[in-house]
Image 1 (cartoon, rainbow, N blue to C red):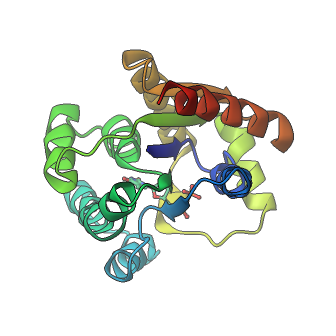
Image 2: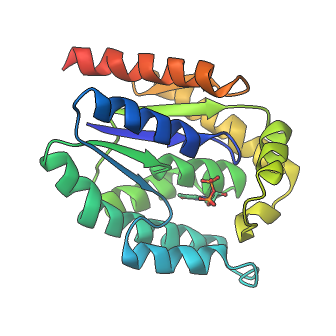
Length: 206
Ligand code: TYD
């Protein structure tokens, strides 16, 4: 089973994934967690290039192809083998980040992005995608308070992040069977309870 977590910056994805992976392991499931961009030796090198603040001149198309290259390696090296070995794979971001950030955020054509993504992933789609949805400013201030390193993608305008958030919500509306939208502006435990519920419903169905 392949589950992805999406949301604007500062939505708490990594905290929720950590809590969920402990919980699922305790229940006896084999769990593999990963993140994008990166998650492999090659992908981590691509991540450095994407995040370097002095790469301000990066063309939007080059950006898409780098995220996609990192994703292609991750699917090939980690995600497909783990799914075949019976793991529940939890990924912090996946292809929907490209649609939200490069599509809705940067304004690249969604059809083109869809084709590039299908090429990069060999068509691998998540069984379930959790959207941790929250007010953009709230997320950014949470992220700043967390003292995390600033990267090139943190230098965008507030309008950019607003488009990203709206983009995510539109993607979720378009494919309601795959997406579960969770209000992430609440305490960690309340969000985690909703996340677990969504996953347990899917595990029962199997
Ligand atoms: P990261 O430090 O991993 O942030 P977060 O904790 O928010 O996931 O940085 C990843 C950044 O890259 C984030 O701003 C979203 C962006 N991104 C894209 O623009 N397109 C993509 O396809 C992916 C995977 C990420």
